Length: 310
Image (cartoon, rainbow, N blue to C red; front, side):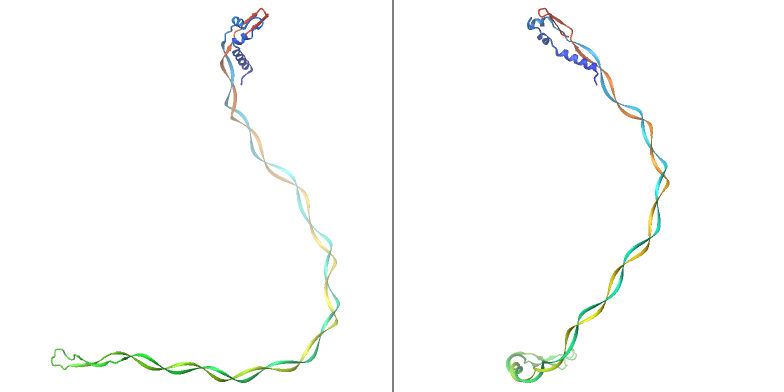
């Protein structure tokens, strides 16, 4: 960071650089002399001088400092706690319970009394009767019928065929023959008689069982019910309230103060010297060139004024 002296020097240098001779001449007295006359008499020259200023610079340095750290330590303390102790005692209590009681009452009701009487009733029965009836039936009869058929007939014959017998080396041996059947198949048409089935309707006598209705009478017992007033004893159960004394065991809790030793852990602070990096701002000298304008005074006799460049 710049100091106050550095700032003042920079502002002065900037102001001197901004004030050129033309500006100073232009500010002359307009009523007395023209601007050209003033410029001829006041001509300052700019000079530069070296100055040393302090500039800030951030650097990292290792410094030793005290750091607070914590270590865990077990400790004990005595505390007073309230311990609950159960106590059981017998208590007599009177309560109302419902007791079942069986009672009897007389009820009147209308009973149905059976009354029997004898009646004659007529009914119809089906009596089986055998009847002879004339009918027809279908009979299968075999009737001879002549038909023509083609048959095969063997009209062959027996033929003698010579054969060798005895030793073949003897030329004087007698000749031998054998009979062989030579077949000759001939087809011819013959007349044959076949039995043909024919269905024929013929009359017949049939015995049929027929059920005929027959009316009969019988005597039956008829039951009728008559309503008669009657009484009866009915048993019923009711719940009757009754006071009963019961012994109940009640558990109560009594608080008793007890000293207990408890362990706990605390964090104890302690300081340790360590090297830590620290950001430090240092002022570093720096040489700069600053423009300086020499002092010049211009006297004007007409206005009785004096102007200075610096």
